[in-house]
Length: 358
Ligand code: 8OZ
Image 1: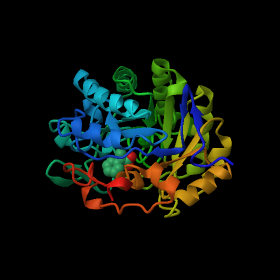
Image 2: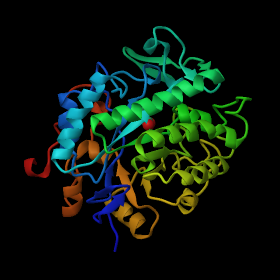
Image 3: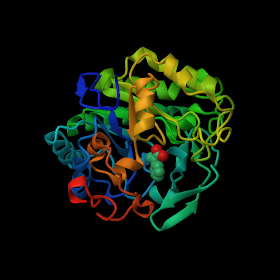
Image 4: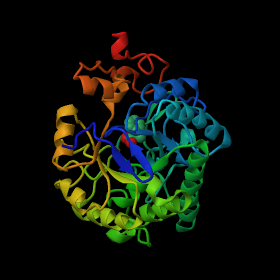
């Protein structure tokens, strides 16, 4: 029977298991350039079937948190190259998550200029800035003439990822960042071709996907969605209709995978009327990755029953560099330390013990 330990083929890649490392923001790149500490961190986790990198901003405009890495300059490409080389040396594979934060950024990251968004709608909550937290601001609505430039930034970032040696990229269209802000009507009240109807709200996602596929080939491109995620003050009046359309429209590309996080399904209604995410699984014609609160048993059941082809683990991979070995041996897991999730040094990052060292 198919389980977490069954190999899986994704595009041109044959991966040894279905225990994927979820994208995890860790804020350890103070100058936005991947560094030797990050090389160690990712190399330690190379036994994951696939590592999806932390969100990496596609442009200076895309940044929204301190110390996140970028994927748009030559220096960043060089930094990532060392990461990928170390992961590949250990037999691993890695995709780069392409990220633009849109409205949940802050003027402190942009020399005082406003962050950009589909519409000038301020999210409730606070941005994480260098010195702590500040209230979100009302973003500047993008002019329609600016959109092709941002699509081109995604393509440029995808090309940077290819040059760094990544095996592919994941387009971050989840969790209340720019693409998701276009998708859902709580953050998109545009009256042009990028707002209003579901087809119009999905246009930016589809244009980005097309541009990135043209750059890398569709079989090296994944997309991440979060239909029920309220994080970053997100909501939609009809998530089922919005995401049904998005998934059906993405089918035509022949992507490497679709990655749907279930985060938010534990608070039904918070991001709009809830629905069964398995509906999306049934609509999707390719590899389907799920994520959000899975342990080994639940993940094996999901794969065994065909609810997903692979499962992305987040917090478990933070605390267990050898998560695959531990799952194989039914060994106990280390306890994660949330205080060291975001920012800091090696502590809580590269010093979680492997089984041999416990
Ligand atoms: C937590 C903290 C900062 C960023 C996401 C990139 O939710 C994130 C993120 C999560 O996708």
